Length: 187
Ligand code: FE
Image (tube, rainbow, N blue to C red; front, side):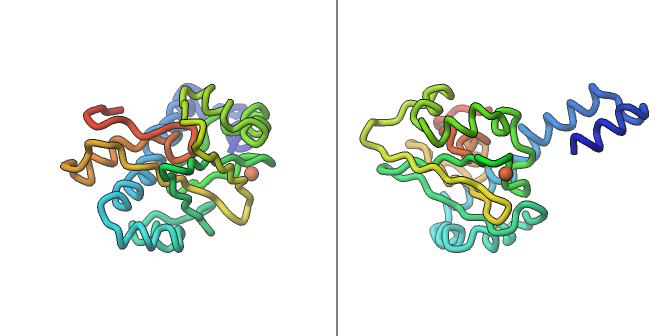
């Protein structure tokens, strides 16, 4: 992506501001909304949740989200006892079909090293404080396997529609560096 971008910029094909906007849109808007639909469906449909945890790739494909870097998707579920955090210590492997392009910090050396050595410290850096008794499990992505966190459904959302629930699912909550928004909030 970056190499192509450099060539196109150098040759004057691409307006850098327009390109930044496109990249940002895929990082924050379009990309993660696919994952949010997956999570919201899992929250309202127990059978779908089971299929998602058993075979993430197949369950995501049911919603027509498939493509490069989506092969061998493993979905890891947060519970009252366990919080999952996803990193790629080698480079920036990321589940493109459900989350879009990885955010800049995901590719940083600081995140890649600290996520493994001090996951609780990383969460604090992102403003997330978990109870000390909650276990944090770190998943290291590779070219062969990508991870998506299934966050816990926020309290007080019993009456919300699937579409409304999806609006509470943030990108970071599916990487594990964040939590879903509270009922009544919107991003
Ligand atoms: Fe990688």
